Length: 24
Figure 1 (cartoon, one colour):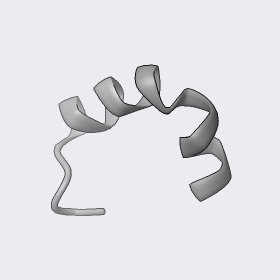
Figure 2 (cartoon, rainbow, N blue to C red):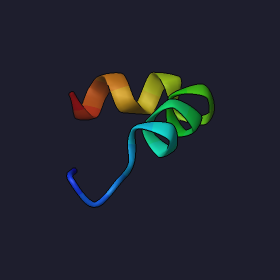
Figure 3 (cartoon, rainbow, N blue to C red):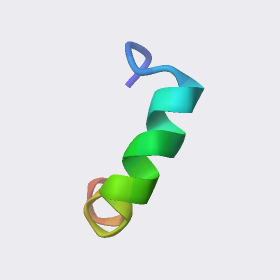
Figure 4 (cartoon, helix red, strand yellow):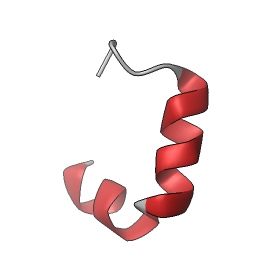
């Protein structure tokens, strides 16, 4: 999502590493 910054995506990736993969 454009609303989320790259840093936010990186931080979310660490917390939602498995969940983000499903969203992608």
